[in-house]
Length: 451
Image 1 (cartoon, one colour):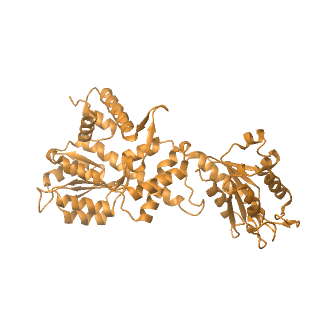
Image 2: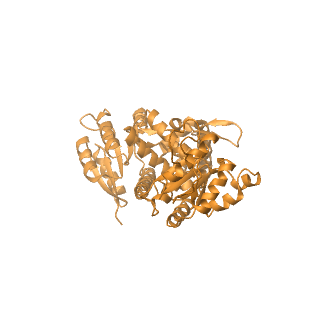
């Protein structure tokens, strides 16, 4: 099996040798003693993980050379995980490096068993992120019009799209607001034999009731004040293609009758006209309402419901797509960092946690909008929970700021790990997948006694 690449950057030859012999069984080791040799290896080998001593020649007492190397990695190889190796007295430099985008830090003298745990975690994270990038690349083609989903529910949706796209059957797309109903409709159209013809969307709930009939069916000249010429409606505009009726549940009952007649006879009649006009248009409809309940309340016709509901595609809410949330978030981050041209290197681990835990009532649309705003407003190298403006509710009662909720969770996890390992902090840190110095800092921040 091919070993992963690890670059050790340190001006201490004895330490470099010690680390090399301790780690060479697990990794393909590269060594560098100064900025020039380090950058040359980084450019050529692109290692997955780097350990970096900030104090490098020609000024080993300072940190300028080390930060220059870190900036080079973050600017050109931001997926590489950098673990800072530093003295305890230089803690503020280590924290500054982590704030800029380093993965973790270690105090000298190095405890190799502890370092091995953090290295395994860093390589694991690098591999997961690489797999996600490859998956995003594979799913970013035209097949589903930017729809991304690895969860079983979304794979079922994609499978249904492939099947119905080759037919002319009406399709009813249901789901909460923001789940991507129009994207599904566009995908069906694009994969159909009608793809070279128009795709015409209309939101039935966004147009006043006195205008929607004319919008859909068109009108004849002189039918009403302002009708100076004959005008085609959306049905005729979609000739040969697809008409997408979004929020079909808001369509007035009088127009539900006319829509039903079209589905049965494939003809329409313009407002103010008497001619029956044949139209070759496929109808796709969508709603976030419960149409069966609307039928019981006599606000939606049962015969129209069954005509539209030949094939039903139910889109899951984002909270039901746990496997997709982070994948979507990183896809949107890639999109908007490129579009807005900001050098943001990713999400902080706390931001990832908040994205996973948040319920996303606005679904994919809310996720996309929050990330776009975060990219615009962020002042750091990584997106934080504060940039996302996510709040968490505890038991549906008190509304907690995400920072407070996260600290409660961190404290609980740390106390359980310490108890599980009988107060052995080295083992507790290993259990949590962090370094012992990081555990000490978290305990200090959270008010947990270290002795």
